[in-house]
Amino acid sequence: MGVSSEGDSSIRNSLFRATTGFFNLAKAGVKNILGDEEQSVIVQIVDELVSGKSTSLTEAYGYYDPSTGRTILPSDGSKSVYEDVIVFVVGGGNYTEYQYLQTYAKSQNPARVVLYGSTDILPAKQVREEEGCDP
Image (cartoon, rainbow, N blue to C red):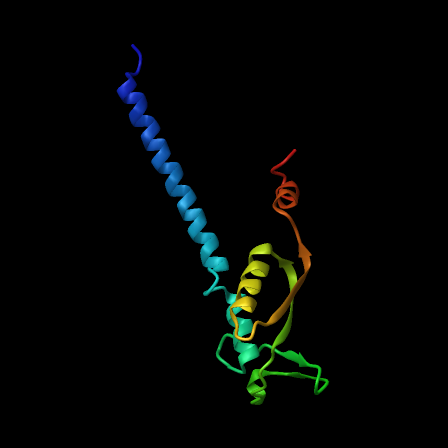
């Protein structure tokens, strides 16, 4: 006695819904970590530092001011505004952060120059290989 095509269709629909739900949860998790262009943590940090703002997000971040030759903390009370920025991430950087920073830089008036670097940036294929996902 075989399963009817109506039963096959029901099973396929259930699997499709479960798979779609799993991918939506995974996507939401990644978005919570990276944010979107306006809510990206790295963009918020850069914007606050270059605008001279200090919030709980940036109060402990130091930045180097080449005009004074010293490292400045936002809590020092400096209200300098910067146009060009170098962002260097210790640890893994990613193309999404880079793209968000470039979008941010172009959206400023006048446009800013934002250089982005990190100790390591891997393409997706290499990440998969290092995780043992690809043979």
